[in-house]
Image (cartoon, rainbow, N blue to C red; front, side, top):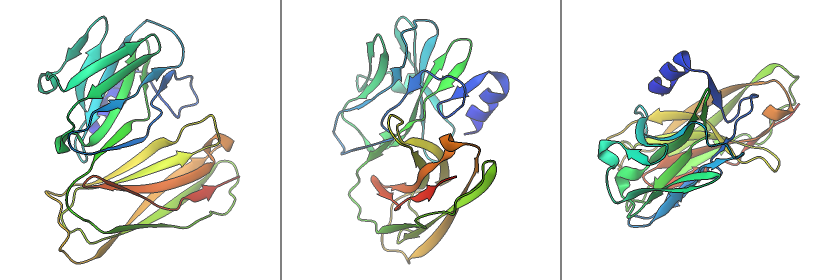
Length: 242
């Protein structure tokens, strides 16, 4: 996410898991669709405020995010998204992207961003497009971490057993907290391959995620999930508590 990091150096940015007030919500961390389906990527404003603009970004695995559409009075689509397949559905407290006739190339993480005096990012929605290839993947996590003191760092481990040698594999970390909080995408690992294959030898990848546990807002169950060739496979979760 090089481009996003460069923006963070230039702008005042509030992420959805920040302690600052953020009024952008993407309630669906993952959506799975078949080729040809119609999907809606939801983005809500948590308070009615017409200042600023909404920008939607698309980020494919291992690539920089690209602007899809900028929404002020009317949506302004970037060149590759000037298609009848893409549209905006607006309400007083919402600005959703609708994708018709979903294609494999639509598989990506989509970010809703609000820009006014601060730039506020939603947590992202990963759109997984089901493919035809059968790929066997297993995801393993330890069930419960030891209780940690406030301010300590924990390292969570995720082991991915895969029979895919050249699949485009994306490992996502989610944090599930008690209601009314929504699950959040908090980190993404990228391994880029050229195509999906299922006839290669089995291999195991280990993915570590470190997190400072500053308060109860950082506790909860952390899930490792693998997105590959239209599949989403979740681990059993690791519970982190103070």
